Picture 1 (spheres, one colour):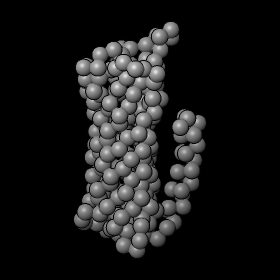
Picture 2 (cartoon, helix red, strand yellow):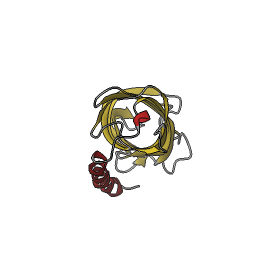
Picture 3 (cartoon, one colour):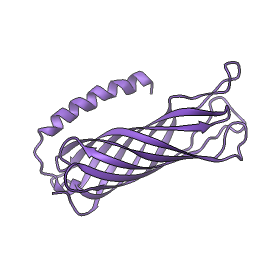
Picture 4 (cartoon, one colour):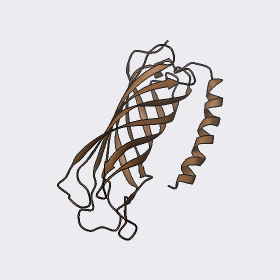
Amino acid sequence: MSMLKLGGMVPALLAAATLAVGVPGTAQAQGGVNLVPWAGAYIPTRNSIGDLDNALERDVSVIGGARLTFWGTGMLGFEATGGYAPAKIGDETINESTNLFAASGRLLLALSPVTNRVGFYIGAGPALITRGGNVLNEDRSSTDFGGTAGIGLRFALGESGRSAIRLDVEDYFYDGDFGGGNEFQNDIVASLGLSIALGGRAD
């Protein structure tokens, strides 16, 4: 997936958000506490490692994980997320793996009522990114502190709205060393998830 394609998703999400504001608020179960298993694509945008003569690139990878989301009353919510990506270095046969685990805690802001059948939200917060190794030393794991910001859409399923489909695009930003020294990184996670109500609701 190219950055041009990612950029093209933003206007579509904003258009859907405009429609979401006008949808009647009937899916009350979307509020409260929700568990969201998800899967998607992990896309490093700053993937060059090393100098120009010996540059390596990080591959796009699958990623999967789970979210625990709480929507209170009003527009604010909180979400804890964990995800794992079996990421690799392109065209490498030795020390090719850079397995990555990302965890974050995000404050969510609903731009349409959380009880709507279609909802639009943004979120941001701190993140931890742990890697199992780098291309020069597969035994050298590291953990970096950074942040994450993203946007998402939620579509209620059925009359009760106790389950919903979620589409999320998140940017993880941090200083990371993948073998060419510590450099600022931007990693995009685009995911599809199933939100399952565990209890409570936002009235």
